[in-house]
Image 1 (tube, rainbow, N blue to C red):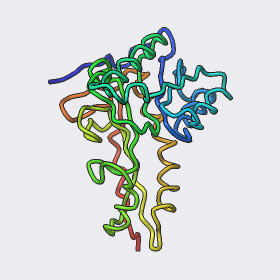
Image 2: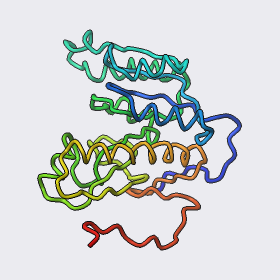
Image 3: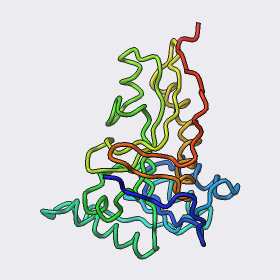
Length: 232
């Protein structure tokens, strides 16, 4: 079934974004930088973390953004603790009138409570060319498997982990002698490029989900050739 979004519709106000993060927040910083540089027509209304000492919260404060630490420990002993936690997170997102949720190194599996409330309105960035290498330690897996090309993917979040419709991807060649760390560093540079781009496409109303595919209105069909690794 096609889930239509308006294409090319001029927004009356900037897209209201909420960011969920657990760690250093480098992708959050890329979003902030794109907004402040005028490349992204959005504003971050809240940054929420499940980690009190997450660097992402410090980044939010430095840029005058609302930061919220939401402790999962009180929910840990409940029968439906994960769902209860996400219901509370959902209340925060609604309080700050969030239209689009961005996961930026958020180290919790998002439950159907959030996914159904924000259907096709939660994005995540993953450091592999999905559907290859879902889950964790994916750069190590790519190197260990002897893959020649890796990369990163921005996708909509569904109830299957790293299975949502793909919005945008960037390919990164794996070099001889690469470790998981060196490959991760180069992939991260591309994450910082494509995540703000994906959000801007959403803000412009150019994304339409059709089954497993995300169609991008006005996308160029110009032949781009291929990335070959090794190149010679």
